[in-house]
Length: 180
Image 1 (cartoon, rainbow, N blue to C red):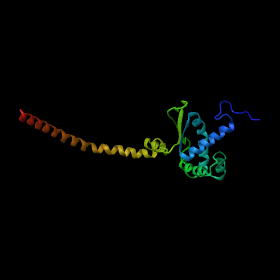
Image 2 (cartoon, helix red, strand yellow):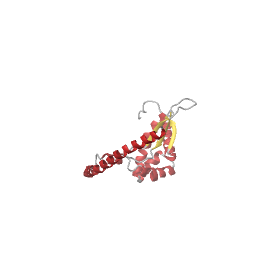
Image 3 (cartoon, one colour):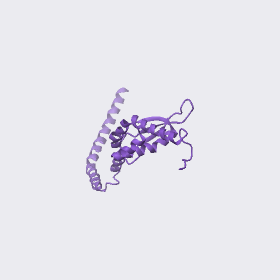
């Protein structure tokens, strides 16, 4: 006989905990986000991430593995057809847990667990930094050379503004003299 997991279980028995987590995962995939206690959110997160990873593969075997946990066929279809392809480029971290205010009745710590909707920006950030794109470095060197050629024009423009500045000072002095 296998030994049960140590520690407290949600709902008392292991079977009840398994059903609670399955229902939480089903509601998470159906609605996109759910509000629950922090303990339940922390317990359902690994289950939800594993199911999304199986949905990304999307073959018949993985669909049946998902059906073992999520019993609603419409939710399984949504998971495989919409949610899985949405996270196709993402390697993990499909959910986010945000702590909220405690529950009114028993002051239990509450949290919102939701599916991450935005796309990953790490590849765009690396492209902007230029860490992995060494072939773009010569283009950056060309960009540095072009502003050096334009600097004499800027100097001429600043000389014109300095000539205009004394004229503006003289105009201000004449206006003050008229006021007196």
